[in-house]
Image 1 (cartoon, one colour):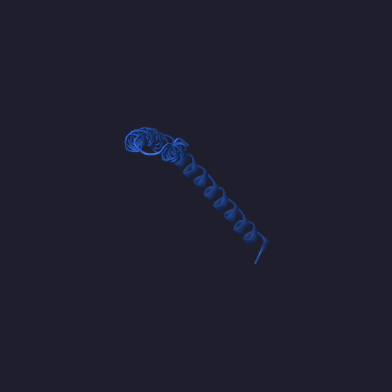
Image 2: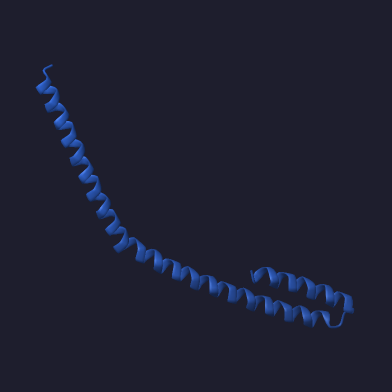
Length: 100
């Protein structure tokens, strides 16, 4: 091969690499724009909804624990004080675990 053909091939390869690099940069910019406009707001809304659901679930769990505690307190009033202390300890432990 002549040196002119080799230079032409190198120039064509460099041009193809530059064109590919420019197209990749363009696609990268389009992807970042798409993520910023479409994906990020949806993820933000989803995280807000998840936070609201979590707060509601914690409130429901606390309410159920309060009902269970009052029911157990009513049942244990007639029993010995040691049973009442043990039941209160278990209920306190459960409430402590739920509040984390």
